Amino acid sequence: MISSNEGDAQNRENNENGDTLIMKAFILDRDGVINVGGSINKKEEFILIAGAAEAIKKLNQLGYEVFVASNQGGVGLGYMSKSALAKLNEYMLELIRAEGGVIRDTRYCIHKPHARCRCRKPMPGMLNDLIEAYGIDRLCSFMVGDRDTDIQAGKSARLQTIFIGQAAPRGANPDYQFESLAIAVTELHRAGII
Image (cartoon, rainbow, N blue to C red; front, side, top):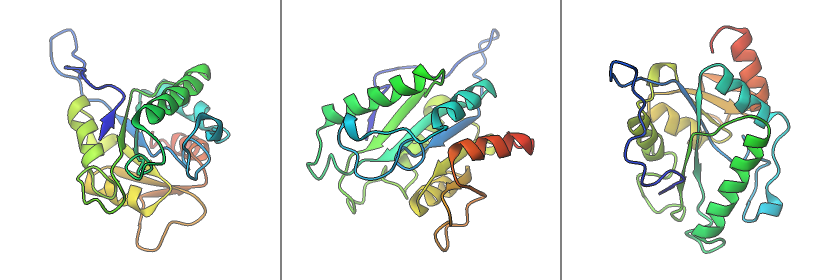
C-alpha cells in the first residue's frame, strides 16, 4: 500500500488542551466516484466526473475531511509504475484544489488482484489505516464507492456506506445509494444527515 502522506509522523490534530480531536470523514474510492471509471493509467485518461470537485469542496465546508482509498492493481500487473501513479494522484489533487476542495490524504493498494493482501478492498486495511492515523470517528464517517468491494470494505471498517451508481450489486446492501457524489452530498445535507 502506498500513501500520499508517507513519513508524516503525527497526523492527528490537537485542541488547545492537547487532547486529540476526533474527525468526521468521507473516504472515497477514486475511479467511478471522483473520475470517470475504467483503467486509468495516464493523466490524459483522468477526467473528473461533473460535480465531484464541488462536492468535495462542500464536504470540506461542512467540516468533513476527505480521503481517497483505491485499488490500483495496474501497478502490480505492470500497466503503470509507482511513480506514474504518484503523478496521476498529484494531478487529481491539483484538479480538486483548483475547484476549492481538499483531499487530506490518499491510500492505494498496488497489489495484483487476488494477491490476498490486507489492503485491497474488500479488505478494510486502507480504511483502517486512515481511521487509525487520523482519529476518524467511525460513527459519523462514510465510505463511498461504485463497487460491491467498496461497500464491503466500508462495512468491515464499521463506516456508513454510500453506493454510487444506478443499482447496487446484489448483496452489497449500502446504507445509502445515489447516482453521483454530487447528488449524495446534496441529498444527505438536505436530509440533515451530514
